[in-house]
Length: 188
Figure 1 (cartoon, rainbow, N blue to C red):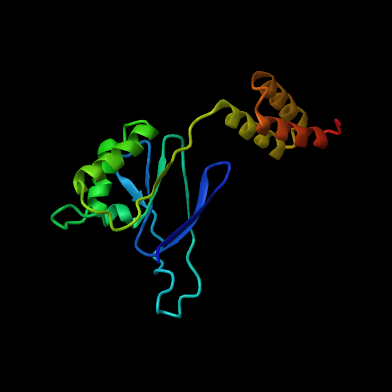
Figure 2: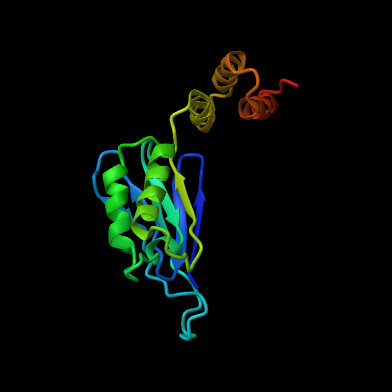
């Protein structure tokens, strides 16, 4: 069976592992190519009993990059002539539509697949997830406060978060981090 698991931290570092034939891809903001996330692991439930662990890999997303997760129902979809859509056609669609905004990009990928297969029966599920970190001032406030904390500048971090909360009074993440830092500076 195919499987992919990833953990993405606050700085968009990704630790991932996978099994089987489906390889998620990343488009980079400043590149026209796609980067395949391949761990080289065999399918889960493989007859090879010597495989007792799965290799992990690491990468990082920057603003404007996209992580594209999908099921094999996309690449194995067939048209009326029983020809599969294929990874190559899916990759071409990703490259051809990469300049679109995230929602339009996702819709364009599904539209291209549906145009290829027409009204032929779908034999497998189709799932597609596109993850793109977007630049957001509140995220930047929190990241900047964490850098200050790492340098033991707790008062400056509190001031930054208080200013952020003034600007974004309903943001619970800023409030949470502010509360943690009040504790660091004994402000209860």
